[in-house]
Amino acid sequence: MKRGKIFVIAGIVLVLAILAFIAVALLRRPADTKPVVTPVFIERPTPAADPTAAKAAAAKAPGDAAAQKQLGDALLAKRQFAEAATAYRASLAIDPNQSTAWSALGETLMQTTQSNDVNLPPQAAEAFRKALAIDPRDARARFYFAMEKDFKGQHDEAIGEWLQLLREVPAGSDADEAIRSTLAASIKRNIQLIRQAADEAGRAQPRYKSKP
Image (cartoon, rainbow, N blue to C red; front, side, top):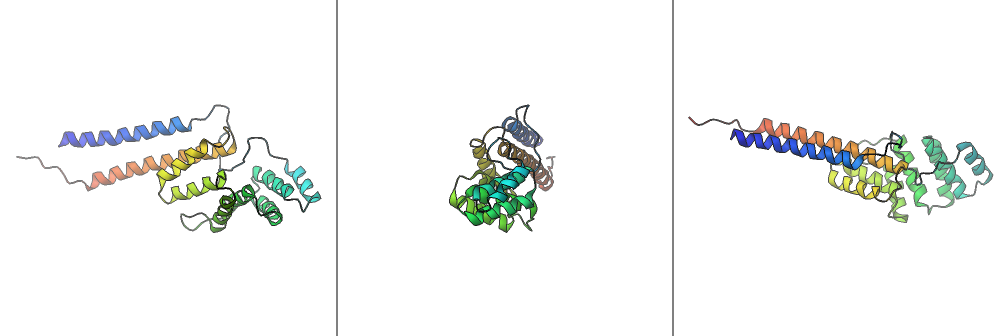
């Protein structure tokens, strides 16, 4: 019986080691990429427009949805979330049929509002749903809905969707970095949950009584 208990513990340790190895193998970044902070999606890895120039262009063309969207992108790249949200709303008021503007607005709301539970903030979720209604492949909206699944404990589904997104977004882009960072955090949490579950199972085990 003692030998069997040792095998169980050894098996748990092996599972943890395998998960850690998978995390390192999947999430290893090239040496020249930038470190990740709070996830922010930019569809293309090219530098965003300068906010000052984008503001000037948007002011000259207040009825141009593209100019307002470009201003939002420039502000989002600088992490000026509230100002970016204003620009995206202005763009969507002109042309509501823009999936990337809706998902970008959703992201600004993710950064500026909080949820009281494991669900996404309602306004952000609504913006992401509108993005997916226009383009079911919108990467940013899918990323955040996968995050919601992860928060709800649907870890396998979330990780599977993030891995699929990694196959689609440009390598080295902010989207790529955001997915890898979030994946690593999720796998780390899952490993910790496995450890806790193993500890709880051990505490609940009946004590072995040797036969006389």
